[in-house]
Length: 218
Length: 262
Image 1 (tube, rainbow over the protein chains, first blue to last red):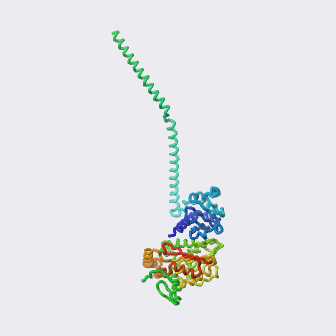
Image 2: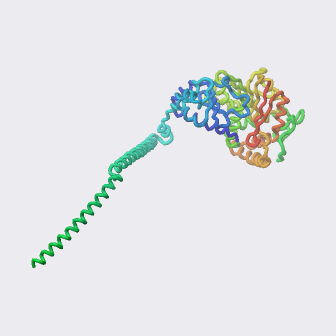
Image 3: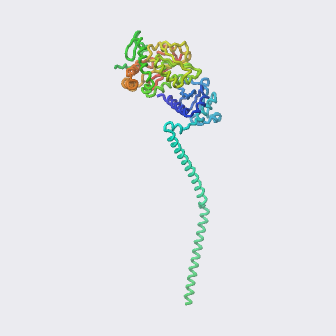
């Protein structure tokens, strides 16, 4: 099974399907028409070659073609990066910064890489509209309204929970007994007990004295 | 039905001066073109769906591999020989762009019409030409093409040596020929399973889907009669191709041969 071709086939299908779902993407794709971009991801055994026309064609540069690998003479732009850097390409304004940080090697026309990056980043797909094609407007609207409500509720609950937790932590902190206060309180309780015991002893003495006086008088 | 043990191992595919094979049958050389024509005339309408069914869709990956190995780029002139319903042409057309050109050639007008309609329906126009041509006598000037591909077509050609020589002639210096064709599985177990599938299941699928068991019986037989990997490599070298290599796909069920003209 030619796995490289299976992979490029999947990438190509996914990209072109996504582009089809955003009508405006065709205009952006036109800017790249006739251009080609080779992406070498260090973790992958084959560089990927993107050719742009009214759609994107993705090819694998096969190992047996090493001697015939496209150079800047045959591809418009050639970039080399690792998998970790790949998501950062979504922001085309970061390309220069990534090159400076040596996270990205770029040879050729940077415009091709920037336009490709913008093409993917600016994809604006109305998923509700897409679903309505299969289920009808009402079901699609209700599904997305329910999902939005569910999402908003979950978001509100999480936010509210976070606020409440914060408040509880703050409040319990203010009413919590500090060790010095506990020590002072214990000391006061001990003193009070001592005072009470002394008073009780004095009262007992006074009661005895009173009984003795009453007995003598009788 | 007797099944030869191995594919053709002789460098020449002609059985004698006046006869050649049509599947496992021996026929007059002059008859084979028309017999092959009848087969493809019969299957043209269902060709794509049958390809998907027979190969479980893997033929698309084999063709992608061929394109990946072609080194095609914008501005190239490509000949998609025995191009049938235009699977390779569609992709080549987008890659070579407005400055390039793709010629879809097939000996069979029914296949060519199906291919032309399919590509036009897909909006592929402008840089594609359609030519009904016999691979043994290509109607193009010398040194015309950067790339020539022939996918699942060579085994149907009566005189393969003559066809390879003709391809060599029309290929530009530094151009390359890619031959994608059924071949001999490298594993004995796979070979046996493949035989079972080809001779028992394939004609039944053909009967069910295309209402034509005979054409798919011929397909299975013609695959067995096609030169195996090393023989085809030698034939290409004899025709003048250099740096000739082949790569087995799916255990050798299919092989991609590549040769350069310098």
